[in-house]
Image 1 (spheres, rainbow, N blue to C red):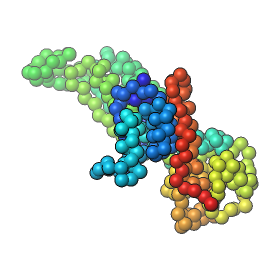
Image 2: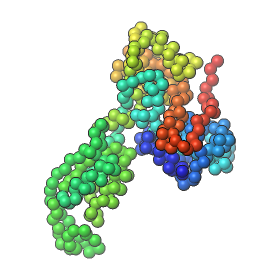
Image 3: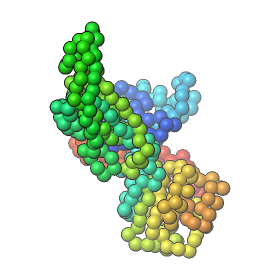
Image 4: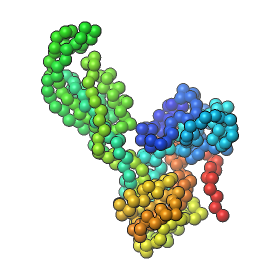
Length: 364
């Protein structure tokens, strides 16, 4: 398989269109057409990870965090990022990152945290805006049903838990083909009137390219009139964080002990305990201070995340417990998730879980 064939599997699960605007995702180093000898899944790509890939004959590293985040003006090996880039290039190793695209997937990072902690009945904590679009186009009445069906097959007509959604309005379209035109109906230089259907279909942002390509390839007109607009609807399957429930409520100290044990953390920084049961839990892997108010808004009993500053613990305001368990610790199972995704699709391919330790924070 090629690099592109492997990464396409990841992108079906976590489309790059859903990555945050500040992020740097996709193929960072390498050639999409390169034949893959093996895949190494990791949370971070450091030099020891590249060394591991070399030993395991893996020439594609799937890294949750992007090793190249901001622009590089030179590559001389003067810092850890440049050294990784140099070593990967010298050894013909490609590096691909999906980062916040996987954060925003309803089956991604936060779903994995919930799975590990036994949290069920989950839903997205902060749905991402601007991910649902609408296609409007015009098609001869006699061709409308056929076009609708091929667009459905390309992924158009979806919204939330519904598929094959559309709205049609009949009317009369007109056009006058100029001298260099090649009309499929009507005659050059004469205004033609045609019974048409205005077809409206919703779709997910990540499928836009495929849907427009399908429209243009299956529409009979030489010039296809269409427009794409972004809807205000929120996609409940795309966004940051997740909230769900434990099967059985636990007292605070018992839950914190459970959290510490399952997530393998040395210590938990948390806000004031509230002397109440823990049942409803919000999680957000990585830096999640921006979601404290969202966790309060859904009446979560505790919010689990990382990278909180001193004053951000005050934002709990006696309404929720805010628990910082460490950045690495919240995302540690992400590489396992990557292996699971690929193994389901290509079970006989060489896919390895990185054994390298990449947590830069140590506890005494």
